[in-house]
Length: 259
Image (cartoon, one colour):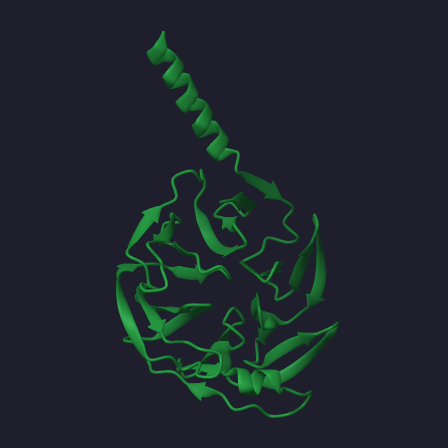
C-alpha cells in the first residue's frame, strides 16, 4: 500500500508539472516571440508585430522581420534591414543594414549587421539618443563561423552561428558593451535566449528545450545544460523572462510555462 501511495504521489507531481504550461491565443501563427522587462512581443510571418496585453495582442507595426524587447525598450528590424525603436506609439528609425537586434542588455543594445558582424550600442550612446540623430555602434569581435543570433542579459551575451555552435561573450558592461572575449560552449543549439534575471534557455534543432545550469557571478556562462522534461511539446521558438518560459510549438500553439 505504501509503494502504491508513493507512485500515486509521483504521478500527481508529473501531472502538476505538465499543467505548468498553459496555452494562450495566437494572434496569427507567430514565427517569433520575445519577452523582456515584463513585456512580450510577437512577430507573424507576414511581418506584423504584436504586444501581449493580458489575453489580447495589440498591433504595433508591420513590415518587420525581427523584433526584440528588453531593458532598452522595443526594437525591430524591417525587410529593408532598417532598425527602429518604438517610442510611445511611434517608430523611430535608428540605423541601417542590420539582420538582427537584441534589447536585453544592461542599458545597451546589441545587433548583427548585414555582413554578420556583431555590434553594440553602449549606454553613453543609448541614453543620449534623440529622434533622427545618428548613433555610433561599437564592434564586437567575430565568433567562429557566421553568426545568426545574439541574446544578451545582465551577465553577458550568447551567440549562435549558422552551424549551431554556441559562444558566450564575457565582460559586457553598459559603458563597455564590446566585452572582453568569446568562450566556446560545447553544444549545438538552434537558438539561445537570456532572461533579464540571467537565466538562459536553449532550443535544439528537433525542438527540445534546455536550461543552462550553474550560472553564478564567478561563472557567468554556467556549467551544464539540463533538458526541460516537464514540457510536453516541441518548440520552434522560445523566450524567457521573469520566471516564465514562452514557447511557440511546432504545431503553432503559444505556451506560457511557469518555471
